[in-house]
Image (cartoon, rainbow, N blue to C red):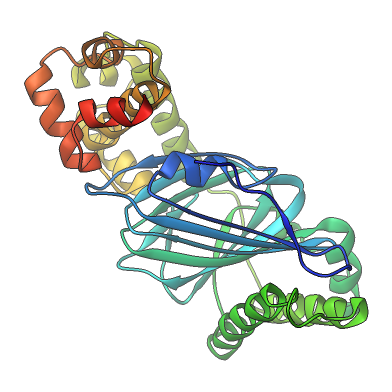
Length: 323
């Protein structure tokens, strides 16, 4: 598959990026300038799409996926992100907080931790601080609120959220048509600023955000468990060993995983290991047996069944496509 590239939209410095793929790794890697990793959590063939439009100081995003994913990584440490679901088959989890259709996700771009359900679509803007700060000061006569830097799920203003969704999609469609229907630089910047103000207007008037030490401890425990499971490669610890190493009971570990990631430890860690095998197979130059063994799968029959249940193909098929 050929790598995509930015396509210019007129002469005003705007450009767009569009990727359609059947691989969550491709969807993660081919989001320009961002460092992301996607792990597929639900079974079945994957289909996804990302559409970015870059304007001066602002990136517009739409992303679609048909399988549950754990999205991790960083977008832009010098920027702020705002996102909301456009369509979803069930709740998502952003930084361990429940996201429903009437919520907006806000935070700095240095951290992304999002678990999506099947059939999920979101829209988002990623805005440079240099653009957001003066606009915020103009609207509210004060500097940027400190809670904007936190990874929060907030209730969106109902009417404003509907307006944002409509305007965001209309703006992406209009800008995407710019090569055929050119916009002046001034018109493009007016569109940018109007859309960004609509996003800001969708945020609640007041936000009471304080760090939650319990939630933080749960996330740290889950992160430590994942690190231990993946670090030991071909001999991953049993659940009992894992609980002993992180200092938690099996019930406590299960509760933390459900709260933070929405799945059990066994299901999540199996998905991570199967994903690691798939990446190795896609790289080629390895046998299925060796790739499975590198991630601790020694019963090849059960491994092949689990692999097919998650990715809707046998590991041999993945290896064949890599060749």
